[in-house]
Length: 326
Ligand code: NAD
Ligand code: UDP
Ligand code: UDP
Image (tube, rainbow, N blue to C red; front, side, top):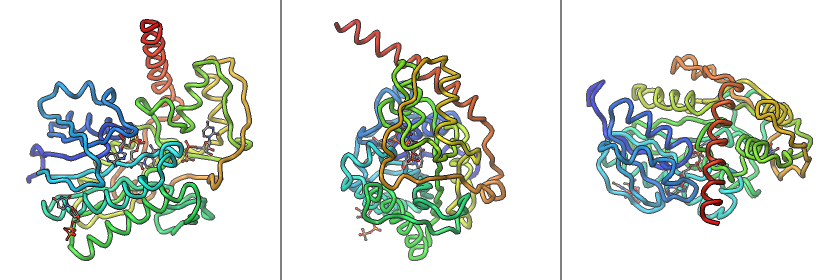
């Protein structure tokens, strides 16, 4: 495979929020895309606009089962990402991360293909070091409600590095920090989608705890750019590399911004903080800047504007469908 040639790229979790953006970008670059998804949290709606493209193929498949296909590169994104969804069937979440990684690594080994793992800032758990550099080993509860996701993703990283050491494979690991944008699941419970949907409905805005916990929010387009840059690096670049937006906001600040930008009259309601909820999170993206020549370009306000427009259109369509069916 020479630089600039059309590749056949497998995207697992391709019908999800980030996966669908990745499929779209890869098609725009001229590649063929095989999107594999079991539609647990993803949907056909997310990829409906891609189905007419002859270079795009969708396969409904669960990555915990072996997969025999022929591709040049693999992006492994399959895994529910929101706490509500990954805690719904925690055993399946761990299986998806661990057995899914084994199957994708086995596939990559047979094909001698590059394989990239979508890991997460959750590998740092509730961190004692701030911001989090890649060298930090994390503080993760192994037996809590978030563990199926956090430990599953940690074990997947272990597998990626062991396959590299044992089989000399071209693996890549990126640790993704909170990312948002159009096509997030409206009911997935993540903070950006929750707050926007509540504000647009005029429902109370749910703040867990006192809202002083922080997160750093990266817009999807920026994130996809970094993922593709990582895949395109040479065999010596393995990672893990943090990707995210270092702008740090309290949840209360986010809520106020959403209310202002939607013009909503929704009141704030304070609810219990979920167990093991990290108090602060911000990526140290020095490595991404130096190795990938990447930094996020889209400010929170600009990304939120696009995301609010998406949910506004989505909810209007949903209301029309309900009214039409009534
Ligand atoms: P998402 O839930 O929208 O996407 C996950 C996709 O994986 C869905 O389409 C789902 O149906 C599919 N899937 C789940 N289990 C599967 C299985 N067993 N077999 C096949 N498909 C399966 O979430 P997302 O935000 O797009 O996240 C994508 C990836 O990025 C995940 O691996 C997630 O852990 C990682 N990530 C995301 C974020 C973020 O903030 N969005 C942060 C860190 C890491
Ligand atoms: N695998 C797969 N597709 C392939 C090759 C392998 O799904 O094209 C799966 C296979 O089911 C196996 C896993 O990947 O369980 C790991 O493969 P590996 O070759 O590392 O291990 P082994 O087959 O020796 O257990
Ligand atoms: N959160 C909140 N209200 C909501 C949803 C989430 O205050 O309606 C908080 C949540 O407790 C956490 C932060 O927002 O502190 C980010 O939550 P999310 O589930 O989006 O991501 P994660 O906790 O996995 O980073």
